[in-house]
Length: 84
Image 1: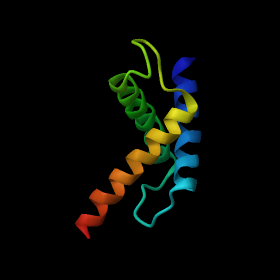
Image 2 (image 1 turned 30 degrees about the horizontal axis):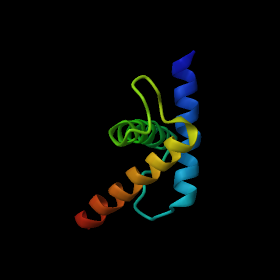
Image 3 (image 1 turned 90 degrees about the vertical axis):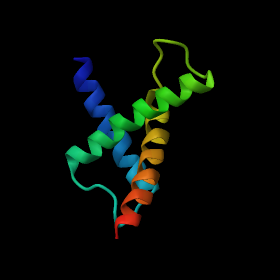
Image 4 (image 1 turned 60 degrees about the horizontal axis):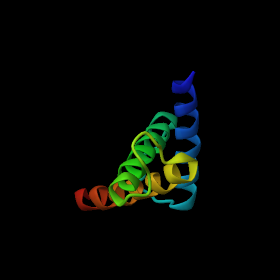
């Protein structure tokens, strides 16, 4: 059941991140939006642990997933912008 929650929260976080930071070269589709949110949560958790905000075993949460997804979108925009 936790995998379903991860997918659902990842999708919602990805949608909110794409709404906050729109762009023409962003990943499109439900699956990529979900992956964006999940990767954003992983990035936020890793950065939070590196900065000492989270202890071992803690995750970033919903707001952290959105912030992480925005970071991933910004990096995506830099990489996709160079290719054009």
